[in-house]
Length: 184
Image 1: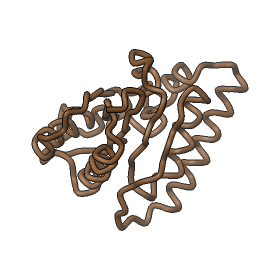
Image 2: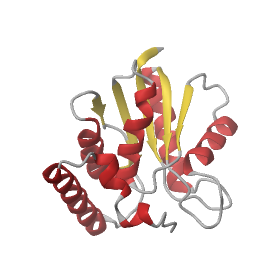
Image 3: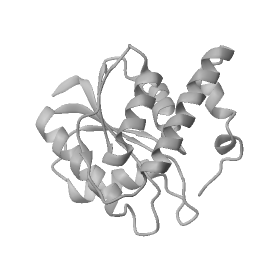
Image 4: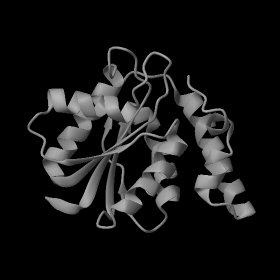
């Protein structure tokens, strides 16, 4: 096993039935990547983002993996505070401070979400980690316009934080979604 490597699965809203088709697809791709590169760790990132369940996205993904991939012998790290993609990057960075041996991240998400995720993780982790975003779950999604808007918002978030000298975590916790712990 590669002890310096983690596969990071970005969560998304889950309902009462557990992960939907898209999140299950992300997990399927991530487990395929994990079987190929043999990482010590798999990071599951996502907090409670639905009124339908009190479980976090990370907890729901963990349950799904244990039930559907019992052969997995990876160490799972659950990051269960993130409410959005910015949070996925920033809270994962904070969580991985507990694992100094990890220096390489393979990020897995949906294909339409790939570019923004890559940008956010690269900024959140600076040059301290090698972040690799090469495989994704290809789903039918017409989110291109929304993704462009969200990417522009992410650029603006990092620009404002850097101009003000505010650390990313503090800046994140001052955003509307985290101030009100907005659940979708």
